[in-house]
Length: 440
Ligand SMILES: *Cc1c(COP(=O)(O)O)cnc(C)c1O
Image (tube, rainbow, N blue to C red; front, side, top):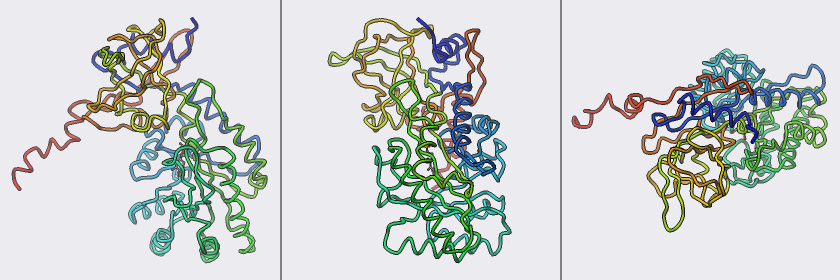
């Protein structure tokens, strides 16, 4: 049997005790793979973009809110897209400069806006009220921050409703096809010579590429209309968002960045002509395939004739998969007690997590070699939105996360995040105020 880099990393993580009886679950991230994806992203857009046209690939921080990962991506030439004060703080801790950071939250407070303007961070206003706030703040906060407006081209939803941001009634941006909205947007830009960017992000995962292309097309057409009405190139940058879907059913990366860039090239030829700077905001597609959640099987049992492996990876690290399994299925790989790929005839079994509710299953009736206590399960393609997006149910601690570089000669690990300690966890749960309620 030939080992993949992931197999080597799993075995080494078990051998080195990164996962074991004391630390029964951890996240592993293939750093070589992350670098490769970043390079593929750069190459795909560089191939089509006119020489000299600025392109900023801003990584969507919510996909992996881990400072060393942001730092690595910055080293690989990416910026950050942030959507909360916390995400901005992480980007800054990673040393990502203000002029490579884009702020996109739909609920920015005045304080957040003031900070972004003062730092010179690009802001995409989500709605009319936010734009009015920015008008007001600009009178008192000296700023070079580029300002954009997020629009919802209302081109329709993808496969997953909760991830579709360009439906008629999506909460994001200015709904462009609503009565009077387009004229309002054009006027808002003409009245504000400093409003120089347009932004759309039409969905995450489950969006057909053609629909994504239609969204970018609508953005481009709007920019052209505004520029024509302004009689100058007022809109100079288009932020086309992220959302490239990830294949969760095999190790194949599909679609690729190149396929998406080629589709944009044919759907929106002017996009790459060099008249517009370009910003992208990919998250999942940069990291998902490079991450693995590795967990110990604590017990193997059976109920109603069905074998159940009780593992330490459930809803706390795979929240979406557990709660909406049809939208977020994950592949599960079985490893033995030493972390070697487990062999044996497939037996349909449930792969359960440690949370105290019945639905805490990451896979149901899944054919795998029959798992035993002490074995390990690996949740594949979990490099984005899984171990970095913890759900604190049952006060389960955030697991450690480790980057790895694997080769036939061995596996090297680096700490991305240590496991949350029980004292951190109790402190976070108000331990300092243990007596406070008695005083009421
Ligand atoms: C979530 C999000 C992204 C990233 O989406 P992916 O599917 O992870 O690529 C980009 N831009 C905005 C505004 C987002 O909300």
